[in-house]
Length: 130
Image (cartoon, rainbow, N blue to C red; front, side, top):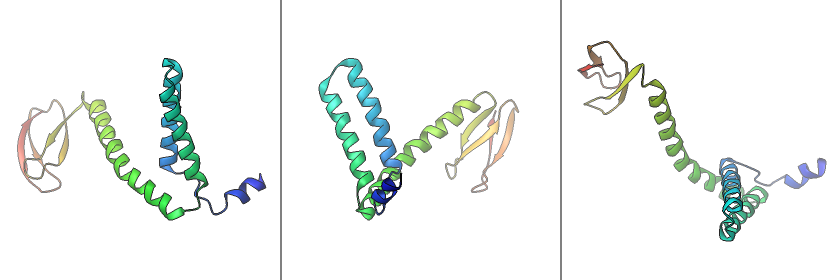
């Protein structure tokens, strides 16, 4: 194991983009095997090669910038998905409203009738039926 530690010294290693590439590789490869389509298997293999290239690269600043670019878009997607799942999970017990002033999302309990909601961000008060 010491030889591996010495070999990886000064190299980039894995990050979130590399893990995403490996997951995408596995999904594409399994799909290509299931439908027996060679171009998809070749694309999956290219993704695997790029993932290993990133892990073994010594250009740390460029790999870091690539990962930051990926995270900027990935966080938008994962944030949207997380909000979607939270709203879906709470739909029986809570309602979500947008503040008419600042468009913040506000969560209020269901079954309280007409209530006055105060936005914690801007302080705007409005009445909604829950």
